[in-house]
Length: 227
Image 1 (tube, rainbow, N blue to C red):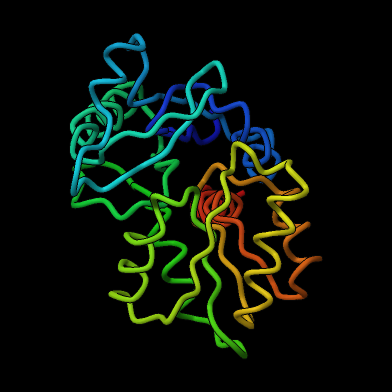
Image 2: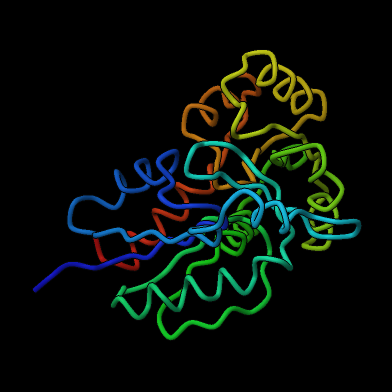
């Protein structure tokens, strides 16, 4: 009998060689991963047409060549839904999004893992001293990220840090200082593009526990797969 097959849907282009290998390390060899991207098969002009306009919910993602791009959520919802359907037709056991943005209801005939809801559920199950620190992927994200977490009942300090420029010591130090100054007692990296090394460095800089969304999601998938 074959093992579980997990579909991963990025809002950018697949494969996500930056984050999926860390997730696969948690899932183990018994789980097969299949990836699809909402921007797969699109050229630069087609992707540019999906850019955010005034008032749009902003998402940032990564292309197959490693370049980050901003897209409007409303422009890619249909493409995300199509990728879920395509993976289900290939026979996946379950599907997970590779985005922590809050999405409206998506159709799925099998188990669907939504990272925003995973992160939200974990945070609601925890208590900590001080404020909640949220690391968001760009300055442009700060207002919408702050509004979303306030609507979910938190009083966050929201700090921008690009997951695609996270190796900059100066940028990491700046983010760490801002979180320390706000007395963040727990930090959540609110983007699937952040890496384990950034979690570890921010934990060192802040002295607070740091939650990494992609590894949380991988652990939920592993439990659902029974591995």
